[in-house]
Length: 560
Image 1 (cartoon, rainbow, N blue to C red):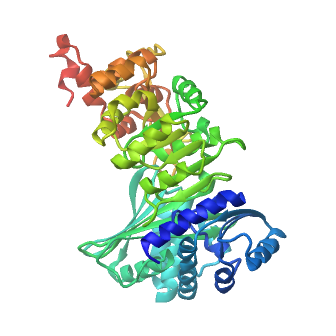
Image 2 (image 1 turned 135 degrees about the vertical axis):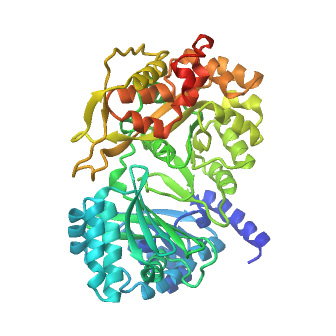
Image 3 (image 1 turned 90 degrees about the horizontal axis):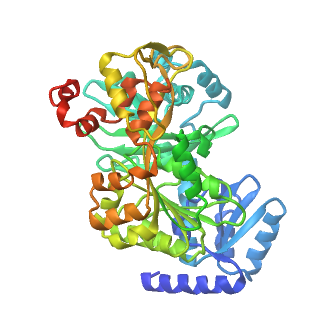
């Protein structure tokens, strides 16, 4: 079907959907659930111009082309006996996109037999047994006596069971000259686990590529895939990325465990001042809330928590993400694809009459301008930007081409954040702060809105390590934050001079702690360590900027 013809049909079905009282949906921007596809076989689905694309407990999402089709009516009636249905209307080209997944499904089912052939009971046993990096390494070493076919499956099982047992967010498989390095990312920090001999690389990677649904015979280009596996009462989703390298292909797998993310505002670690500000901003009916920070700083988690706060039966929330990481009940989540970009998806979402829109990331001018326009026309928009701090977001939006005169009316709040590891409560050890640590912490919090003061000697805590935290000294992560509300003073600064220090000065009266102040208070409170804070943010650079002229020859003048 030609592009023009396809667009004509899409427009026609969208018009018809409104007349029939259905919601129009373009399936090219929706993740198709293989479990849902299984409910209706391909031949029957094609004959009825229908597809079942999502299932969640007893909730089923179905897309049809013609609500008057006799076979489609029969199928819907049959499904209604077991499920609660949400029916959408869509075009044939959109259905073709969904039906193409049947081929992938058949191929993956045929190929994947025996790929990950370890029992659920055995996997649960391993997850409970492998609770430290040393235990994972010893267990994988013991598998060298297994036969080749069994060894690959058992190594994969140990790799994933250990990651889940330790709470790792990512597994890295990196080929080197003499072997394969496997690493876990634990609480945001990569840690070496084990080195496997080079001969195992191809076998492991082939199995993982097979599981991920990517091409086995492609070795010279990047590929992305995903798969899921059951571990008892929950299902873990794995997002995989493969890239070529000089010693072979490297693979990184992100583990998405729905049970570890409750996405509640109270779990983000917001300080009291910021908690009050965010809660107030989430009650507003329109405008934009932006989270900023580098990759892995918890921006998307914060947006998910915001959506949970504003979600209720009277509010329609639609997201566009790359990819959808966690499925939230009763929220329409869409995923970017070849024909469904952030820009085209956002335009389509605006025609769906949403109250709240979540845009995974603003990457270019078109998305930025459309999001700003949505925030100005009655929508509450949540999104992210890659900037170093909250104040830099305004210059970034202007660089992308947004008219600086519109930012005051569009943006409500910009949140800057990082994640710090929390000290393990079972083994953290108190000690007296050194003179250097005391002076740095004292200077960081000297302008704290809550008027925090510290007295010497100051007791702070450091990581030691025990069985519970896997001998790292840390267990879990928490955010450290800063934020800028767009009020009259900040808006004037954006128009007059949007440089970071000018905007920060304009926002000082808002009484929101800076990221450095928030981090310092969490060190003083024993939540994290001084070493962890300095690993995550550059406190020394900020102290140099704060240093008065009469301290040019003092202690802080020599901090590098």
